[in-house]
Structure formats: C-alpha cells, structure tokens
Image (tube, rainbow, N blue to C red; front, top):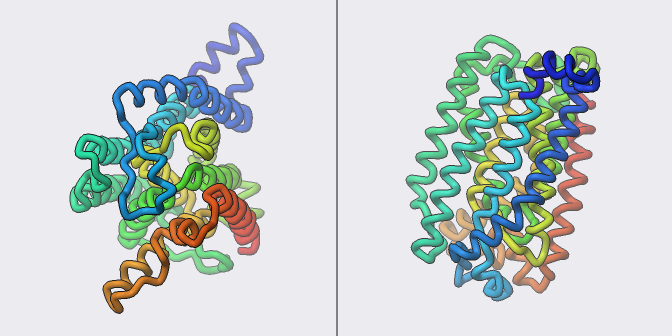
Length: 360
C-alpha cells in the first residue's frame, strides 16, 4: 500500500523514496511480520487458553504426545494475521500475483480453521470430514488455476520449466490446470502432514519461502533471469514481499512453537502456508524446484502413501507409524533431535535446489 502512497510521502520527506525499492520493502516486510507475530502471539495464546481450544491428541500415537493434550492450537492465526498485515503495507496491490497468493492463503486458512474448530468441539482428531475438506480444497485450487490460466494463457506463465533442461520449455495448455491443482492441493496437505512435532513444519516452510524469494527476485529481473536461463516474468518480483512476510511470520511463530511448544499451528496455518507456497511456485514456473526445496514435506507425504498402500496390499506396515517422524519417535529418537535434523535436511535441500536452478 505504501508503494501507491510513495509520491505523496516523498513530498513530506525524501527518505520515503526508499519505499519504491524492492529490497527495502522486502526487508521491511520481513520485520513487520516478525514483530506483529511476536506482539500478538502472547495475546492469542492467552485467548485460546481461555476458550479451552486445546490440541486433541490421537490415542494411537506416541505416548510422549499425551503431555501435549490441551496445548492451544489454531496458532496459525498468528501467521496469517502477520502475513496479511505485512503484505497489505509493503506489497503493490496492483500486482495480480499478490492477489492470487493472498486469496489462496486466506481461503485455505478458512478451511483449516473450520477443520480445527470441529476437532476441538467434537474432541476428536477427525475434524472436517475428509470428503468435505478435499472438496473445498479442490474447489479453491481449481478456481485459482482457471483464473491464472485465463490471465496467463499462451505466455511464459503457462510454460513448463524442466530442471537441467534449457532447450525444451513446452507449453502446457490445459494441462496447466491439472498441474496447478495438484501442486496447490498436494503442497497444502504435505505441510499439514509434516506438522506433527514442535516446529517441525514451520522451519522447512521458512526455508522454502527463502528459496522462492530468491527465485522470484531473479525471475522478475531481466538480467538475472537471462543469467539463470529462466523465463522472465514481469510481475514475479512482487512475490518477494510475500515470501519475506512468510519468513518473518514463520520465525515469529517459531518463537512460541519451538520445543516444548506453547501453541500449535493447526490446520489453519499448515494448509494456508502449504497452499501459498504451491501458488508461488506455480507463478514462478518452478514446480519441480519446489519439490526439491520442500523435500521434507515430500518425504513425509510419501511415507504416509507407502504405509497406507502397503498395508492395504499386504496387511503389513513398512514403518512403525506414519508420517515418518512418528516412526523415529517410536524407535526412541528424542523429539528435538528429529526436529533439528529435519531442519538441517531442509537447509541442505534448499541449497541443492538453488544449485539445480543454476545448472539449467
């Protein structure tokens, strides 16, 4: 919003001209969301405690999780408020990419909020029935996919960028809708599945946002886009503001979510963050890069698919429990060790993904 007011603000003080600089706005976006999440965090925790909106622990899970029962959940509201406020202040509202991401973030946050609320009210881990949950996720994803396809049809925004391949950039056409749908729904659920330990999901999400911020900065700059052999997308640079807002909000939330957690993210946070990361990757034409950056989310999701599929086929389990972080818990690994090692893996995957980008 301050971008639109810059001309008038400069008349009051010349230093306000910095608001037109992308890097300055990105840094301000980070600190705004960080401070907002730090500021509202204690109030949200206290309010959720008064409402008795505590975590419902699955009875067939690791015994160490029984002590987490009653810890306030729906903490993702901290993340969403911080991101929305920061983006409202520092992003350019005339950029259509900003609206795509924010609409998806808020919409999936609402679905997650309903899911969390039903879990609390009914005191079970089911929440919103799966068929309704996926119906709403699918409807939102398809709506966003169709809108992005109509606006970007026959342009670079609907081309497929392949890793390690520079010469072949095929036009997806209507297949763009299918890919967009699976990326948004898949990423949102992958982050949701990963969010099972204190701070396990939020740090990989922050690392992924950092990676996408760097890619958005390069993609929105003709010189850097040519250097990295990626399509130049005029509107992409504004996504940097959203990514830095996500980083600040995520780290601010981690302040309260780190082991032992004072509050849990809940579906309101995990579904919203995952869907937003998916949309950003699609807009940047870096779906395959997201798969590497978010490798921790991918591994967690695959572990569930393998567990369920193998059990239905052979009646046996591959892991002691899925997702895979529970497998390590049941094998005696302390929770902090699992969490920090996943953080390390996520950082390594981020660096590998950036290296992969340069190797096209």
